[in-house]
Length: 411
Image 1 (cartoon, rainbow, N blue to C red):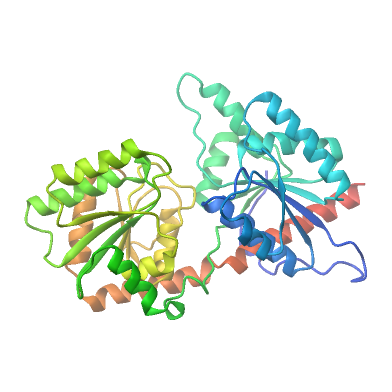
Image 2 (cartoon, one colour):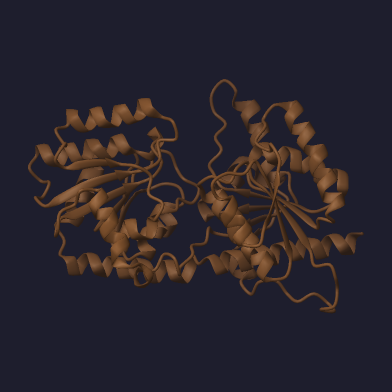
C-alpha cells in the first residue's frame, strides 16, 4: 500500500505528449444523487476542473437539485439508478455502466459511494479501465452484521486508487484494511475560496438571513448549521445552551440559531422543538429552515458550532466557517482535528459532552470582538493555504492522469 500526501501531486496534471492527441480523456464519476453534500459538491468541482482542462466530464447519477450546477460546470449527466443496493440493481447498473464506458470511450471511472462502487468495480473490470474510489464518509462495521458490513464497505478499497478526504480518514482505512489497499492517496476536500470569502458577500445577503432568524440590530448569533439528524448534535447543543442559561452564564443580546434541512425527519424536528421548550430556551434558540447561502450564513453569525456526535471524515462546517473569518467550536474527532487549530482558529471539545460544549461557548462569548476577529483571521489564513478547491482538483486530475498513463503502458 502506498500513502501519498496531496503535496506530491500539487502541480496538477502534466501535459500529454503531443498536444494534438485527441480525444482528451473522458472521466466517468458515479454518485448516488445530486442533492446536497460533500460528495455531490466534489463531483461538480471535479467536473468543472475536467472541462477547464479540456477533458470530458460524465456523471452517472439519479440526479437532484444540483443538476443545473453540473451542466453549468460543463459536466454531462447520465441518469441512472446507481443508488440501488439490492444485488439485481447493482448487477443491472454494472451492465449499463460497462456499456457507457465502451460507447463513450471512458478513460477512468471514479465512484463516490459504496453501492455505486460495486457496480463500477464490475464494469471497470469488464472493460479494463482504471477505477478510483473516494471515502467521503466514515463507514462503520459493528453489530451483528459487522462482518457483512465490512465486506460491503471493502469495495471502497478494491480500486486501483483510494482517495481519503482527510488524514484521519486515511488512518481509519489503514487500520481497517491494512495492506489490502492497492494505493491510498490523501486529497483533502477543497473549498471555493471565492465563494467563501467575506469580501465577496453583499451586506443585503447577510441582512436577509438575520431578518429570517429574527435577530435585532446589534444582537450576536451562535450558529449550528447542518441537516437535522441526530448525529449532527443538535440536542447536545440545546443541552449546552440549557446549562448556560440555567447557570446564568448565557449573555444578554446573544441568540443561538440551528439551521438545517429536515429531509423528512419531522419527528426529530418535534424533538428539537420540545427540547428547546424543556430547557426554557424559547427566547434564546431559533430553529430555522435549510440555508442555501452558507457564505452569508457564516457572516451573519459571530461564532459557529459543529457538534457532530459521530466522526465526520472531513466535515465542511469548520473549514467553511474559518474561511469566512469566524471562530469555530467543533467536536474533537474525524477531520475537524485537522481543520481546526485549537486555541488559534477555534476550540475542540469532547463529542457528545454538553458540559464541555457549554464551557467552550462561555469561553468564546466572553472574548472581545477583536479576539474573535483574530481567531477568524487565523482560521482563514490556514484554510486558504491548505484547503482550496483548486488544490483538490489539481491533485485529483494528477492522480487520474497517472493511472491512465500507467494503464496505457501496461496495455
